[in-house]
Image (cartoon, rainbow, N blue to C red; front, side, top):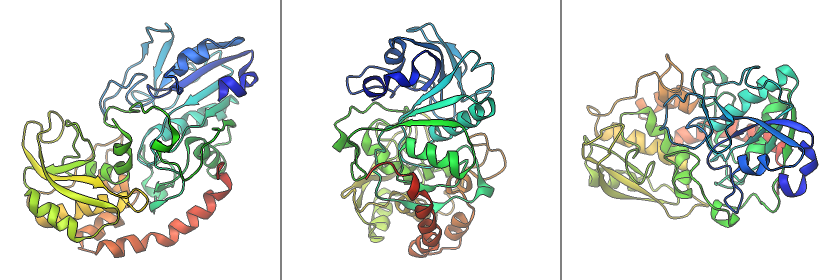
Length: 381
């Protein structure tokens, strides 16, 4: 959209680009090539979020700076020694262009890399141009609690619902005003996207924005599947179905699947499964658990489903189950499950045996208030 309809926006500008491997157009051309070929535009530097510019490093692996072999430009890492660009990284730059494919969940770090970059640009008066991209989960359904600011972290710097139903451009506008970032922001909107669209409706090619996000199906379950990272359950990393295979050596697959089925969660079924992770949790150990099958994306509640997966595993195997300990995503004190949930009340409710329906009811009022607050920033019908 920028190249075809907004070419004058960056004319005679020296720019830096914050991008990753999914920053492509429908013809599979990468943003580095597209912007580098623009006349009267000078691409000076590349900035990369978690997993680096080309998506090779695994999760939580700090990434060093490098030089891009295709363009010979420096690639500054924003997931390593620093998470916010410095003045040196932006020296000689007139505008920062952000082109990141998000997956629609509060925990995904790319939005927070963008927010920190916006803060840095606000301090030096630099323009930020965000190229909007579809939310793979659509923009209608919103789910989960709104994070408590006291639990702010790199998996939730500002309060959002877990499944926020916003595009990255809408989030940029919302965060810029509601949380007083105050940068000189321009959002280049999409053409033809509607809120009811899932990824498959867009006709766009899917490129994994991170190593363990191989398909749109992964993104669909991730808003709940990421909670498994806060436990000693395997979330399926090291397998071909990350976030869809959930289990551990201390579970019994049929018992776990049957208990989850009894919850009658909407739009999802649980099949007994056994898998062998090749890396990360339980590497080389046979895990028993479930495969999560989404049967109706319009009814599916991924966050509630993730809470059910955690709560039932804890109930069935209290001696085997454990909460993961810090550090996690640059947080060294709080439990990972608490920063993922943006509160400790959900963990405490699970520990107390509170029914899932009651846990879900507890966040509804705050969620409705947040939906009203975000409404002015929605760009699409």
